Image (cartoon, rainbow, N blue to C red; front, top):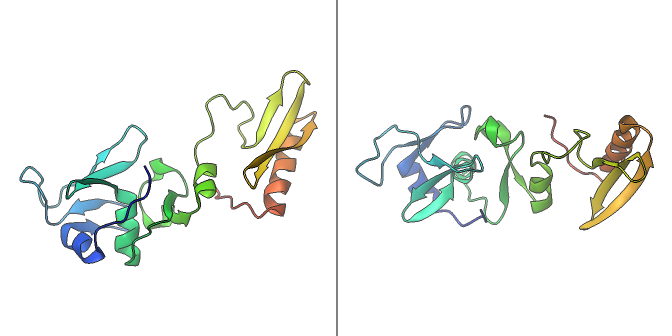
Amino acid sequence: MKPKELPPIGVLKEHFDYNPETGELRWKKPTAPRIKVGALAGTTTTGGYTCVKFKGKFIATHRIAWAMHYGEDPYPHIVDHKEGVEKGNGISNLRLATSSENNYNKRLHSNNTSGHRGVSYNKNHKKWCALGTIGGKLKTLGEFESVEEAVACRQKFEQDNNILIWDR
């Protein structure tokens, strides 16, 4: 979902309560008769994010959480979940991020055999490959006999290029 400008902070605080420790967003002033005061706001999407329909627009609840906690709309920035969506919208799990930082923080692909970002097995060469991206260009960092060597190379690349890694 592409970031959108939020309603004014005062309007959000009038309609929602946010608990920064649990990440829960609850209705304070519902916008529809079927919504009860104190009920959790929003529904979970197939991607695991929670969105709320507010004044005719769908808004990601983690963006509302950020705005309510810090008192400013994060737009045009992305609000990223440091430890993944499944860890919730607690303020300690949220950060402003660039698009590439947000993409880095996504789950590993299900076909990742190494269990590490930027490390894959090259069947043709029968070696482990370390890969990295700089300026949108994919670079081969080297081929190695062991997965540990490839991981070490990738980690050095991340350190040398100041790629922000969140501990999981």
